[in-house]
Length: 135
Image (cartoon, rainbow, N blue to C red):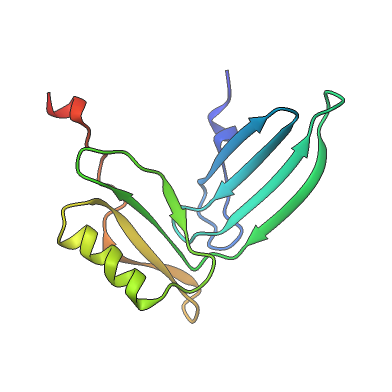
């Protein structure tokens, strides 16, 4: 069984303690990504496992310009990050989904002068809705 501490790490941009870790494996390659759901900072490592031990192929880190989660009515979703300043049309569309169309989730944008993210719309504390919960 995996320790809960292995499922997250501290964000290197805003210092949020729980940047989410995703892993994938296909054939002899794997990738590990950590993404901060608050500011959008993302780190990744790609490994090859040909000899049963990992060999690092690529490593990268991206500054975050914000993050969001969109949960359509009756659906599920994941977290997403901006790695460049989003266009105003994108921000407006996300705000409309969250504030007008009934989607759950949130939108944050990074404020460079304050050196921290700011909640723009929604709430990070809203729970997922599913068809199972409605039954």
